[in-house]
Length: 174
Image 1 (cartoon, rainbow, N blue to C red):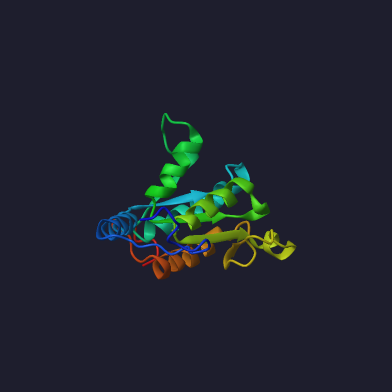
Image 2 (image 1 turned 120 degrees about the horizontal axis):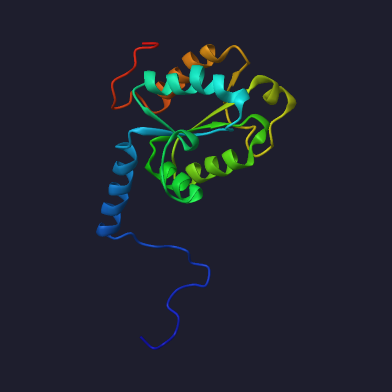
């Protein structure tokens, strides 16, 4: 070539090679072969019932493994571990009561990876108005003492969004 630019200054086109398409397929298959769901939620006592009677049983009844940062032993930096777990998960559940900034960051990371994100929040938090960045997402709501109701609805949402997991369903709500 004569040293002159052959492309236009604002031309953002590109071509994906056959090797690139193969890599895209590998990455898509990797996400679909995942066995777990990453849960982003507060680790406060007032959320213990939500975890034990709502979120965890819903995931397990749908045949998936529930992965929560404070319930898994590891010896890594917590931020690296969380990002790795999100990458390795099939989907992410975000408890967004109070617009938890950490959970919102984790949701954004999952969305950037094109992972399905399922949103839950305490009904009062939704009624009071969630942060504008997350309020447009369809949240399953829960009330204190009504966590088992959320369990059934969340299980249905999981099955309708990502399907039956590869593990044996717990049989809680067929």
